[in-house]
Length: 82
Image (cartoon, rainbow, N blue to C red):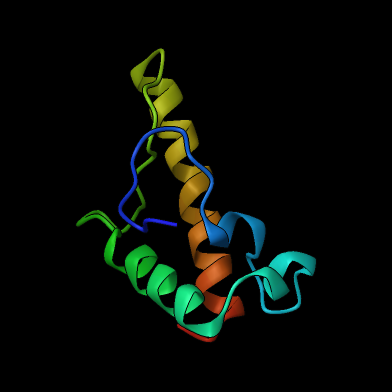
């Protein structure tokens, strides 16, 4: 439940990436708001979002950063944050 947790962890927005997600009912509004704010604050200077696990190569990191960036943007949009 810690929005700043690092490593290969699952957070509330992984389970409820949109307000209509089935698992959204498991989390109160305050928890979702805290995690949305944390997600928005993790955007890097280059516009992308970081990954939170070790990769096997720099190319693998670039590929997963693209995926995490798209995922973050879709989630923030679903909740009306962008």
